[in-house]
Length: 365
Ligand SMILES: *[C@@H]1O[C@H](CO)[C@@H](O)[C@H](O)[C@H]1NC(C)=O
Ligand SMILES: *[C@@H]1O[C@H](CO)[C@@H](O)[C@H](O)[C@H]1NC(C)=O
Ligand SMILES: CC(=O)N[C@H]1CO[C@H](CO)[C@@H](O)[C@@H]1O
Image 1 (cartoon, rainbow, N blue to C red):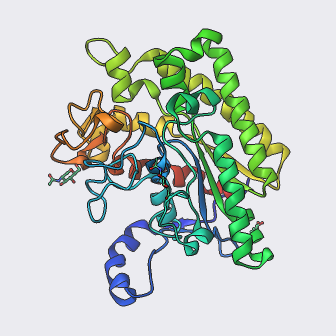
Image 2: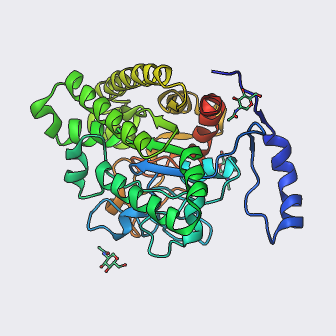
Image 3: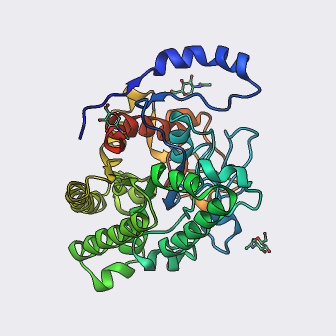
């Protein structure tokens, strides 16, 4: 694909931002950090998948996989828990802001969702879900097929609220994020062992990749063109996985990381092939494995001090209901990579988001 024609004005924009905001405070909501080519625009960010992109959809589900209570949201504006599985913003929020679209991507199931939020994007993601249909069933959350149904509903609402041509423009030019795989590996395959009853890791990662592809094809059928498909993270380095499978020293669990790498290699090969076959589409494999591993191996380069436990509670095991108002938190979440035993802090997500943009933005032009 073409060489990147974008430029980053991050530093100068950062310095300049307070002044811009001062002058435009009544109308301006977001200043783009990434400069897209002038003939291209991304009207919306639309998100599917798991807790990395769940902006509060699980709040209204009957599941234990939720986090709409303190200390979640501790560093969010207004210091309240929105249902995001971190101390503040998630990658969809950070990506949308860097692209100059808006500051926050709302949950589609948020009862306060305004119709004016629709044209700039929403999230259908649900914490605890995965490509394996068993994963969402075990967690009582929205599976990817449920998320597709909601997306169809979204398209209809969009078409009802504007000219068909305009709605079509939004659907076909938006950036779609598909973020799943962690829960399949960490929960369904390794922790509960449900996956292992029927499959070895080779067969299980094939099932994940096939399911990811069916999902991508459905999105394309519904009109999506720009799709970023996230890799699995180094699952064995999530603090809870260190505790469960990393021995007394809580090292990164080797079998989990090898499983992530196996899945990622199959996914990226298949996406590259798919992208070559469909040059009118922009489907990109988004590596989050290596950017996260780099922070874990070289935390000082990022001003991070703690990478092996979360900020919430002991940091070894607390997540969702186990990280709750009775849990003490670390003093400074910005020097922790992980917020709870499973999810990065906003600081961690910020480093990740910037790497994602640096490495992938040209793939979606
Ligand atoms: C934008 O312009 C570039 C260079 O002029 C061209 O290669 C690219 O196809 C254009 N993209 C769109 C979406 O029109
Ligand atoms: C928190 O950690 C960040 C990142 O290392 C650092 O820049 C900041 O100064 C720290 N804040 C406090 C209050 O110590
Ligand atoms: C589980 C739960 O909280 N369900 C609620 C979701 O929202 C609807 C209406 O907004 C309520 O009727 C449900 O009780």
